[in-house]
Length: 164
Image 1 (cartoon, rainbow, N blue to C red):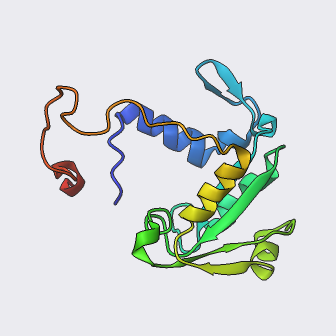
Image 2 (image 1 turned 180 degrees about the vertical axis):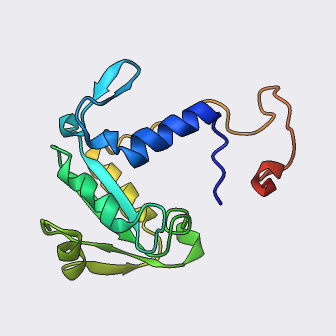
């Protein structure tokens, strides 16, 4: 299974609050840094990506987010599942994604009116961001292990990925 590497209490609270009780969709039920969270107050544009075969965050569950936002949203359905549906660089030439320029009310409506596009969804996301603000900012901070005097522990991806 997927390992969380979270402290036990944090993991318990996470599962209880966000999965069992679904408190994220209950206005002001959770706080982030002391600020009550209400998804209905999110008025900024939101890009929502779901994986068609995702067994952890199924598209039907991800779609529900569209009913809690007050601002504009763009929904995209990516081919494949939980990992490959997200981590699909354009160079891989794999999978596909679906978009719908209409105003679908349900996931079924989205799929019925969707257009299929070959390859990675990443260029679609970059184009979406560019329409919001085309300003590019150079990356800051550490970008290479050992680049600022910190010690390289081991080659990527690291042994933790193989721990069970």
